[in-house]
Structures are given as C-alpha cells and as structure tokens.
Length: 535
Ligand code: HEM
Image (tube, rainbow, N blue to C red; front, top):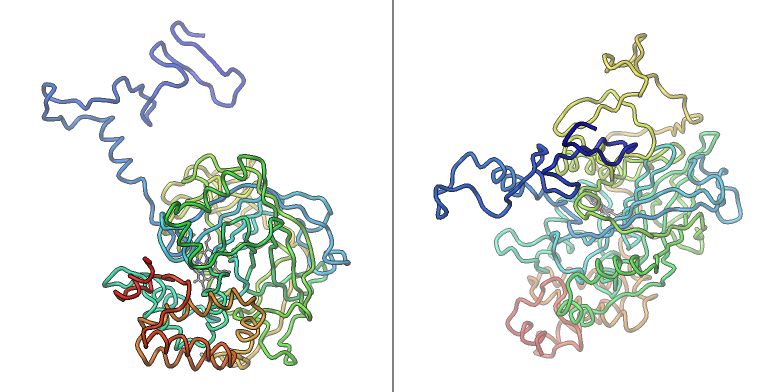
C-alpha cells in the first residue's frame, strides 16, 4: 500500500482506505472529510460571533433540519419486522395451482422473505398505541417474481364501500380543524349519514377496536381480490391472517390503564418478543368464491363492509408467516416502507371492488409525494430480484436499473441496439368480460344492518357491555339529530342493540352514568364526563 495509507478489508466490495488521521470508526462528513472537532463551531474568539464558512456545521444542521419526511396521511404510527412466509402448496385439501399460478404459493415449503408493518390509523407518528382505531397489517412479500404487497387491517371489513368517500371518512375521524381534537360529535355526524359503516362501528366501539398488541391480532386483506390459474381462470378471494399467539383485545378501562404508563406498548411488545426469540407467527387463510355477482347472496361479494360467512365460504389454510428479525434502523426500514394494493404478481389480480381500485391509485400516488419519486429504489421497497426498467432520473435517483449487460445509451423500448425486451407472459391472461352503463350509483344489495346485528349477537356479553358503554359516551357530545339517527340505525341492526344504546343515553341525560367505560376517541369533552373518567 502507499506510504501513510493502510488498506483494510482487502477483498471486500468497498476498498476502504484510511489515512493516518483516520480509523474505520472516525467521524466524517458526507464528503468523506474527517471531522476533528464536533463540539465547537468556528467563531471569532471563543465567545462568538460565528462565521458563515462553517461547512461541517452547516451540513450537519441543514441535514438535521430535513430529517423528517411527511408522515403517512393515515397509518402514521407503526412498527415493523422482517420474516418469511412459507407456503403449504395447497389450499385446504386441493393443490393451490387449481386456483392460482402465483409462484410463491406453488411448492410446499418454499419460503419467501417478508417485511410487515403494523400501525394505527388516525393519529400521528408518536401517538399512543392504546387508541380505539383499526390496526394496519401490511405485508411486503419479496417473491422471485417481484414484490407482492397485501395491505390489510386487523378487522375484516371496512367503513365504506366507495373510494370517493375515503377523504371524508378520514377527515371525520381526524382531529377537528379548529380545536385540533378528535371528536365523536364529528365522527357520529358523518356515520349517521353513512349507514354502511354500522358493521364496522359495531366492531370498532367494542374491545375489537383496541387490540392488546400487534402479535395477538388477526389480519385481513379486507377487499376482494382474484386468484388466476394457469388457464387464465379467475376466482374471487379474501385473505385472512390468524395469530398463533391467540387474539387479545382490551376494554376501554384496560387500555386507559396501559396508556397511563406506556404509550408505546405495542411497538415495545413486538420488538422485545423478537429480540428474545419468541417469534410471532400467523397462518394465512383464504376464502374462495366463484367469480360473479352471486345474486343468491344477500350481500354483494365485492362489498367490503361485509363478511363472507364462514359456514358458506370456509377458511382454507395456504401457508404461515413468522417474524424473526427487527429492523436495525426504524426510519430506513419502517418509515420509508411503501406498501400498495396495486403491487401484485402474476396469478394474483384485482376484482372490480370499487374501494380496491381507488386504493390502488392512492398508495403509490402518496408515496411519490411522501418518500419521493424513486421510493421503489430504496432497499426496503426494492424487490430482491433483478429490476430492469427504462424509468430514469428524478429526485434521489441513485442508480440506473438497467440490465447488467445492457447498452447504457438505450433507455427506451423497442430497440435493436441492446435495450430491454418485453417478458414472456406468465400464462393466458385473465380477461373478464364487463359491460354496462357508465354511472354514479351505489350497489344494489346494500343490506347495511343485517351483518352488524349478527356481529352484535355473536359477541360475548362483556364485549357487548363495553360496546354499549363506549357508544353511549361517544354519543353524549353529539347533536340530538345525530343521536336520534344513530339510535334508529342501532335498532335496525338489532332490537336489543338499539334499546340498550337508547336507554343508556336517556339515563345519561338524567344524570346516571354507565358502568366502567372511559373516554373513547376523546369523547369526554363535557366537564361531567372528564370528571367521571378521572374517578
Ligand atoms: C395507508 C389510502 C382504505 C389499510 C394508506 C395511505 C393512504 C391510504 C394514502 C398512506 C400510504 C403511505 O403513505 O405509504 C387509502 C384509501 C382507501 C384506503 C384511498 C380507500 C379508498 C384502506 C383499507 C385498508 C387500508 C380498506 C385495510 C384493508 C392501510 C394500511 C396502511 C394504509 C395498513 C398503512 C400501510 C403501511 O404500513 O405503510 N392508505 N386507504 N386502507 N392503508 Fe389505506
């Protein structure tokens, strides 16, 4: 080696050269200059003023000033982990190839690396993890055919069935633009005009609205997708994750107790479980339905406010997932992770579910804004297989994803000069026939209350009690018209459900407060309720 220069790491991909002033752990700036004083800025005399040519200081402080990127517009608070998915090669008793040609599912025992991000929806990146909120459950499968993202929630259904309502739904649940407080008066104002949300509200205000942690909760794709087999035939499919750890939910008072001591409990629980080798595991199930409208059902199979009844559409196991590695940098791996419902591999397809279609546009749109137009090049988002595109440039493009043997001059297709070539199709395309008038209209079989009533009746009594208490406390601050409309709708779900909410609300109005309970979603803004919640 040259005099005065020691060469270490010979044979490593990076030729690491250090001068006498430097060792491997020497602090440098991003230009590679060793930093010999990281404690003092350059000043005229040791009391200042400072000078403007403080390059290292300016680099350090200006980078710090830009450390935060916009947080996710929803699902801001989250925790993530790496792991793998193993396919059984079967779906129930049948070979999986009967329904899908997606490679990751075919051969029993094949393991696909995954990254999972769990989240809460409404509040920001550092909000308490005890809040009443659906929990996000998003999985990125790094398959040999490229990435597949399954972006789901813990609950199996959703509030709305049309993507155009999503911004309104989120605005109603987010803090008031004037007071900056989440407010059930606004939430129920919106819900009272959104009857399709009654099923989700029934889950959300019960203990199912506060999973105890991320390991002991279910996951679901919620929207209806398709599987496509080697002949190009499609079936409708719904995905569900069942935790091997069991399911654990919290009542409102339980969650408040935890929140008083620890508002990061779910992140901590996941991280510590993985560190001590208690790797959380989920089994993946699908429900399958022949493609079509199914007029014999009292709901539309593409309506994401509905469950597909288990008796008719059994849960069929297809594989299992284990999370066994924590991220080493939260920002690089969890904050910059970008999941989207459009990210499918051959053999998986979209259904005509209107929500799914709206979602699939929204995710990559927001990620181009939130992370940047080259977000797919970041290690957490890049597939673990070769990528060769003619996409070029843009902010933070740090490599060219061309074929290693390709001609760097050719960034277009087609070409005879060594450019990229189209791939061979994975099989005959799935080409469903669609016709109809272009219109704005809701679906025919709305049946907004039937399944909500069934869900209410199937809950255990302690769950129903918590549900009713939380609803009453949530409804107290609402306008009387909103209360009236909500009670009408609870009655339509189930007579007892309506009666219990209505009686509880009347009792409250006469000064009698429900047992237990607390302040779901910041509902306790009345003096009286604050006092009661403190007792
Ligand atoms: C995150 C839009 C419905 C689950 C997001 C984000 C947007 C969005 C813009 C932020 C993404 C990012 O910044 O990376 C929508 C729209 C919907 C919708 C427009 C309806 C039309 C749903 C539904 C589910 C869901 C029904 C559950 C199945 C999630 C999850 C995340 C998320 C889990 C967080 C992903 C992560 O961990 O990075 N959504 N969403 N969303 N959404 Fe949705």
